[in-house]
Image 1: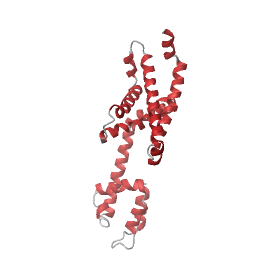
Image 2: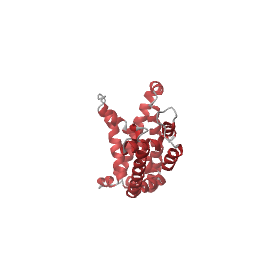
Image 3: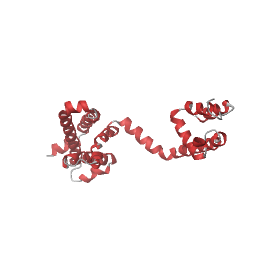
Image 4: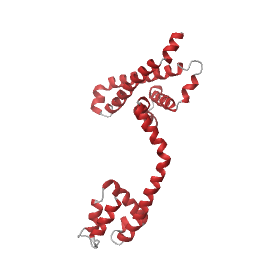
Length: 220
């Protein structure tokens, strides 16, 4: 029995187990992606379902190994936030098997929990884990970046409203409307919005055009 406990707490054994689980996590992500294809699901649905069961079994074994490794203090397994995340995801993945008759949207959400298993890759790859933790720790400082961006949107919202209100009341009639329009400009680019303001076919095309160009270019 002592040899069994020594094996569970052995660093080399745990490292091999983590590598196996990493491969299984990647396979789990691929399986979930394949199941989005109706053709693949109709032809290979049985095998995909079987693979998913095997994957779930491996995750259960991993949790059991880690709990047993704590010996007479199994609750220490839940001291690690990543392990709590693993446990919750595995528990959610059991719901479709425990309640197979339920086909509501509520339980469909839980079935989607399988894709969250792919997030466990952050815990298995040390460099990714460091990157994620660094991003989380930087979030408080990122609040200042958000304030800066909101200030930028507000300034250009006021300027844009004063410049273009008479030419497009819907998009530039108020600071809120202009800021909303600028939000879409950020992702879509300025081309369409620029053309709308300088289009000769409009009753009141904006003049001079270089101000429109300078406004959008400086904002971007």
